[in-house]
Amino acid sequence: MNDTRMFADQIAAGIAQYLPDDGQMECRVVETTKNNNVSRVGLSFHREGSRIGPVIYMEPYREAAADGRPMSEIMDEIAEAVSGSMDRIPLLASMDFGNYETVKEYLSVTLVNRKDNRQMLSQMPQRQIEDLSLILEMKFPMQVGMGSVKVSHALAEHWGVDPDTLFSQAEKNAMKKEPPCLQRLEETLLAIGSGSGTPANLLVQEISVPEKTPSQIYVLSNTSKEKGAAVVAYPGVLEKVDQLFPDGFYILPSSVHELLIVPKSPEMDPKELGNMVRAINQSEVAKEDQLSDRIYTYDREAGRVRQVSESVKQKDTREAAR
Image (cartoon, rainbow, N blue to C red):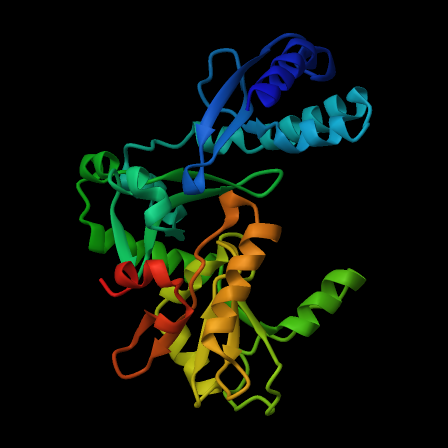
């Protein structure tokens, strides 16, 4: 953290000459707590007289500098990201965040781990899904990814809107703007590798049972692949997946952005799947993007997600049973 803070101070001291605002842009170093209680260092930019502006996080740029990338290139890239994000600022500046009618169309939902976000969750409306929590965010398109503002109890009370109404509006928005998408993992990886083609979305085709391929794995997310694990809470989504896999299926939390769907079969051992998820989290998924180290299934009779007890580490079994 100290190294990143020092790097951010260095960028802040020299970035002005790369920006097109002739000294009208203000920049300061900020530290933010993100998902799973991860602290990140960023630079907050805003024009004089405005309190709204993008925050550019420094960790990837510090890593690039450590790998030998010239600082001039890094400065140019940061300046480009700032300039692009500033195009969205007039929209945000014109919005009255205290007026629910002004912002309700930007409401959406995000799924997070309850244990790793206890402090944050104590301050906001949520819906519990086993050891996970669905929360409310206002999401705005930026030059890179999405900007977001979490909805706290205080903000909801200021709006005078009850949580059920907020979640209903958020899910409605999410279904429209970030619809659910189920694709074969193999086709998804091929599309990423080739940079072309879009795998078929099995949720919008005529419902039919996929071919019997024990090793077949599917990716469940939204079309933007941004915080797409929340699609498990979209109305009717898991019911559609259940129609595709009448023998049942496991839900593996790849990250907060996507889930893996594994049809149940004698070849699929839930204990081994749980071990696989934990190993991947430890070696390949950034802490900020991790969702859970357990696997889940869909209980069609109850119409809800449930943890698979065999997949839980022995010491966590008591907590999983709560």
